[in-house]
Amino acid sequence: MLLNLKLKIKSRFISEFKTEPLLVFSPGRINLIGEHTDYNNGFVFPAAIDKGIVVAIHKSESNTSSIIAVDEDERYDFSLNSISPIKNGGWKNYALGVISEIRKTGHQIENFNLVFGGDIPNGAGVSSSAALENSIAFALNELFHLGLTKKDLIYISQKAEHNYVGVKCGIMDQYASMFGVKNAAIMLDCENLEAKTVTLNLDGYSLLLVNSNVKHSLAESAYNERRKTCEEVALKLNVKSLRHATLQNLVSLKIGLTDDEYQKALYVIQENQRVLNAYEAILENNMQKLGDLLYDSHNGLKNQYKVSCEELDFLVEKAKKSNAVIGARMMGGGFGGCTINIIKTNLVEEFKKEIVNSYEQKFNVICSFYSVNLSEGTKLI
Ligand code: GLA
Image 1: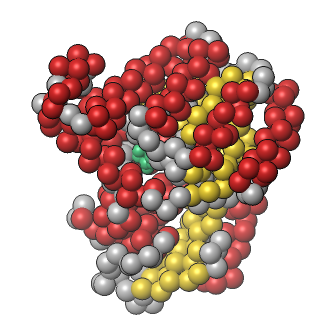
Image 2 (image 1 turned 90 degrees about the vertical axis):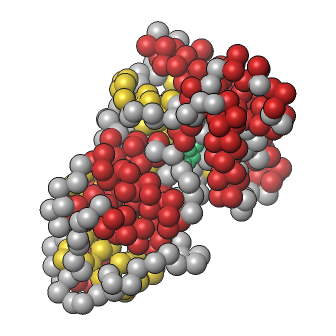
Image 3 (image 1 turned 45 degrees about the vertical axis):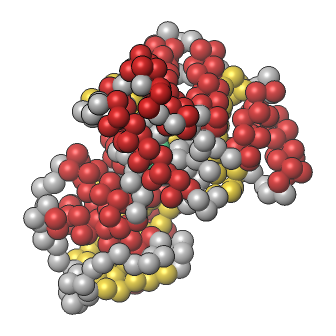
């Protein structure tokens, strides 16, 4: 797959710009557990996947730069001297944001031509956005020998999303996409980026993503609102972030919190603990325990943190009823995108058939499926 994508992007670059480009691949990510905990400085458990974005890049002799988005069939020519966020600019804001944030670190770049395309769908919750940011940041760093580290690059990507796209995301997606390890998931402490890498040997089970193929429009504002609520509660609890809040803190202050604030903070405290428990479950090779934690996580995301939606809840309920799946939950920011399922490998096809029909009947939408392999992070190819 990656080979085909690489050839496609490379040949498009050569036909447009008549020169051999530098090529970069940045993967999307899954997240086993630990949702909406990253911007609370908590724990997450993501992994990079074998699907993502390929960038082809080369210096340009002209006095403008050009970016071609192959999948959107769009071309954008611009001057490096006049960069600012574009209203409803879509993919352009990711690219411009990265350029702007690189400059803020004091590094200069010259004109370039860039072509990109991918094999992860937008809005599926597998972070095509972090893959795009990281691939461009990494490519510019290589092309202009900026000497930025991978760690510098993920913060550049994250700030591009904050300042140009307007989503106040945490660091999980950029980290996973940059630092992914083949066949492994990474338990990451978002307070200090300390990472524990575990090889994921699912022993007769597989990871299956089911894409609801819906994306509800309130997702971005709802995301930022959640973050704000968490920061306000942390302030009231007198802790640096909800990572440092305990159940006792929360209960003792319950009276000063609205029910909504209480439930959201409680969710974060519990989800952090679930990530730690999931890490243990994997070390013990206890798949059932891991599966139960996924269901509990979904329950919290739905009822306490309130970032799920009817379609995702339906998919998780179906998974619960099927004897093929031992754990499932919505994945990513919410309000659409994928569920992640731990499923008995020999029952995958049967489960797909079961779910595709009932989902279509209920929502008049076809869901899609991705089996993913855990892969390396951002790299030259
Ligand atoms: C999005 C954000 C991440 C993270 C998840 C929810 O993917 O980009 O930083 O907050 O949502 O866990």
